[in-house]
Length: 111
Length: 112
Image 1 (cartoon, rainbow over the protein chains, first blue to last red):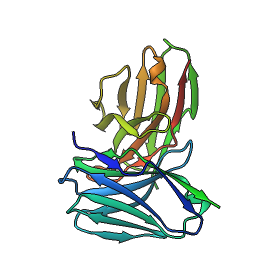
Image 2 (image 1 turned 90 degrees about the horizontal axis):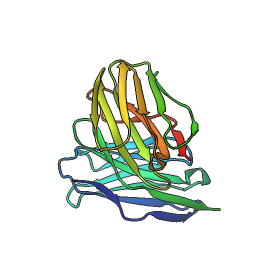
Image 3 (image 1 turned 180 degrees about the vertical axis):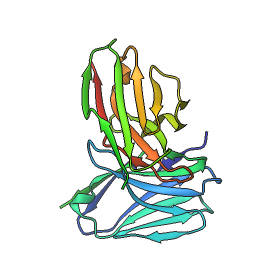
C-alpha cells in the first residue's frame, strides 16, 4: 500500500543550528500532512500541519514545506535547542480520517 | 478543552495472561478513536480505529481486540498475551471530519 517514509533515521545537529527533517510520501491523493514530536516514553505531540493547497506554513521556530510535485515534506527547526531532541514523525491523511505515519527520524542535539 | 487519558502507564504481564488497556476522552462527543502500537525504536502501527460506539475496524490480524462500549471509551484487550505483544501502546482521538490526532501518554507493556 501507499506509505510515508523518511530519508534520514538519525540527525545530529549542533545546538543553535537549524535542523531539517525530510519525509517522502507516495500517495498523491493525500491532502493533509502533520509533523509530530515524540519524546522518550511519551505520546507523540502535534507540532505543525499543512494542507495540500499550501506549500509553506510557519509556526514558532518551525516551518513545514510541502512540495507536491516530488511528494516531499520537510520540517525545519530554527535555532535547535536541547529540548528539541526527540523522534519526529511525519504523517499524511489520504483516506477518511486515518493518518499514515512515517518511520520517524531521531534528532540528537549536541551542546 | 479536550483531554485524553490512558492507563496504566506501565504494565508487566506474563505470557498467556489477559490484557485490558483503557482510554477515555473528555470534552468532546463522537470522536474517532484509535489504538496504535509502537515497537522499541520504531514507527507507529495502527491496530484499530472506531468511528462510533460498537464500530471497530481492525487494521492488522493479531492477538488483540478492541471495544468501544461508550462514546468516549476505547478498550484494547487480549485473552492470552504473547511475547510479541510487548510494546508501547498509544490511544488517540480525532474529531469527526477533522484530520489531526491527539495522542494519549501511552502504555508500556512488557510481556514476560
